[in-house]
Length: 84
Image (cartoon, rainbow, N blue to C red; front, side, top):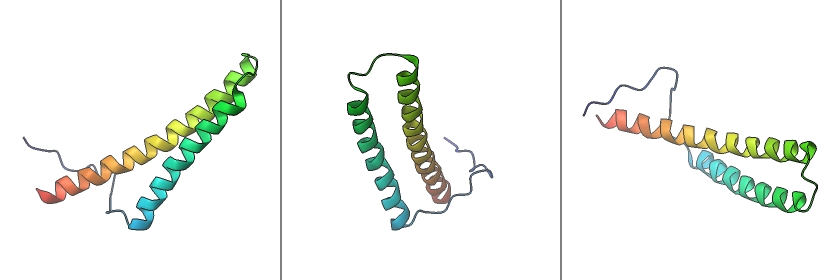
């Protein structure tokens, strides 16, 4: 199986331990924020304002996780390409 070369749009360098620690910190912060948001919104009326707030917070969490996953995949692609 041949792998296509890494796209030029995603120049990737191996992450430093500080960058990896930052990723872990972001994931832990997202976990805490989601748990806190759930407790804060529990029992509130199910109306457009509450739903909008919750969806906004949820979208921010998904965005943060997606950025981490994207960087992990790009790093793996760079490593795979380097090995070939």
